[in-house]
Length: 102
Image (cartoon, rainbow, N blue to C red; front, side, top):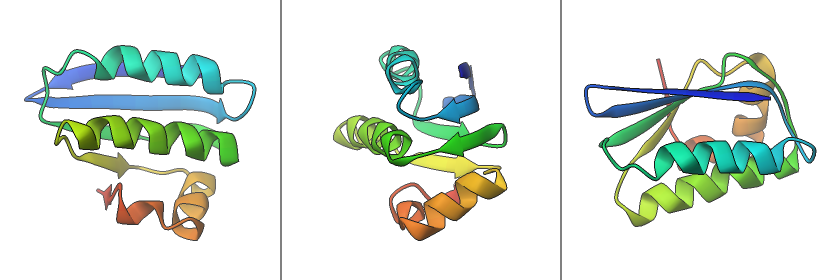
């Protein structure tokens, strides 16, 4: 599990690599929260192209980060979901709260 980030033109880009599950959730939560804390951005785009697996714990991590940003009025978008991530987001209707963008 790895979480990378960068800020470009008022957008925080996060990319998640590996598996987001029970074993990596604590690390992912802390790594994402650390980047989300700064607030030097107006939107968040999460790249899931390298996300190999996500279970219900991972869904909880994503929803938790979404709620933190919603409280601050910052929209969260998903880009480049892997086939597995795309299937999970469609099945759980998560694209309704974190829209997919190209």
